[in-house]
Image (cartoon, rainbow, N blue to C red; front, side):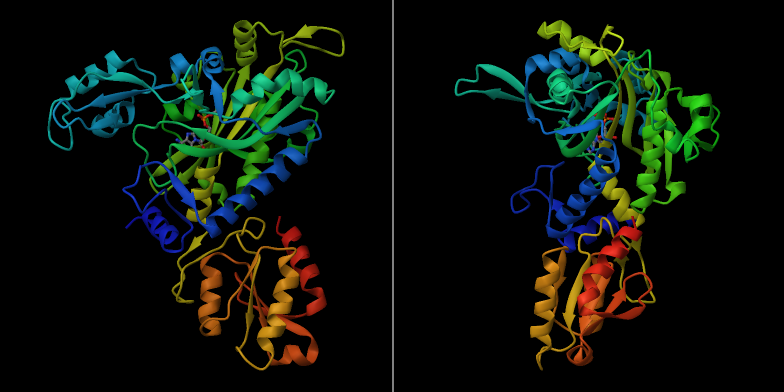
Length: 492
Ligand code: GAP
């Protein structure tokens, strides 16, 4: 069993993440978050918000609808171009995502090739259906958006948004005006996106409903400087350049300043990339499992001024987890044209411009798999496997145990639990031996376990066990909150 399969099994067993509506035959590509998974995701999003939005006073967060009218996607190009190539078996009707399928079966990379060219590769290599050995039909294109109709007689076509970004573009002018902003300014959004993926796979790595945290950073192309660049210029990031990809070479570590000079050439892109690298390290992904891949010309949209994917190494290989794109003025111009609305803004020197946009687009599901995979500790010494979640994103900050279920210890433990519950996500456990309770607490990655024992009744102190070191210290009951607060802050 691969580590990924192991993680998936544990998520199922511990009710962390499991298939949607699983009591019926499941629809693939949809997952639910149980109590522990929900808290992990909630903490991750809160931490993300703190790290990327609240730290910048020119980035504003909005919340848009998931259903958007067809016109939005006509303008954005999704209606025409948000397609994947598919191939179907003529005999058993099995469907495959053609580009992945061809690469897997023939080793030929066909990303960016036309359906006709892909069909030729299949014919030339005599590829058959892996399920029934049947003949495969021609490759065709399939739109990945999920369609719906609005109103009782379905008079208006609409789509579940495939990215959160489009709400930001359509709301841009109103947000810019209402916040009385100047460029550069950013709009962030955390929310659901939907894609009718042909073959959902690798647990929640490729699903049909997922969370994106996106920022569109609007700037004047005549002044592309990032005012905070100095803060990150010496931060190091790992980049897999286009040249390295062509020559099968390794990624290189560069400072943000070197990256700007040699590869990325946009201060805002480098700013976000440097912050992303720090962020992902702080949530438990080892540095060597992170890299930015400069997308090859054939993978890059024609309007893009450069795309850099933050990839995490999973046990099945590297996978994009954050897309970083220089979207130029493409989206705003397209929306201006189709809607007839003026989306230009005035610069301080009174020029009327359509701002340019740099976009970091984070996928929460892939981030969560990265965390689960890289924080998972197989611990023979302890006798149980556990998650070494950084405290800032750990589902529960602490567990509270009475040493025994008698002699006023449960009452004291409940009192402490009720007080701490107002400030932290914590849980109470009084079942089984203390060893079993430590195991249960570790298994969901809880950084601290607080035990109330006989001595507590005498000295008003508790024992706090550190999950990682298993070391125990005595802390006065009145200082537990300060201790947890301080430790949480120092671990950020
Ligand atoms: N607005 C730009 C955009 O949507 P993207 O590269 O298509 O760019 C951004 O998506 C991120 O969203 C990806 O890096 C990935 O983490 C996540 N994502 C995209 N499709 C996904 C899917 N089917 N399942 C899970 N996550 C997905």
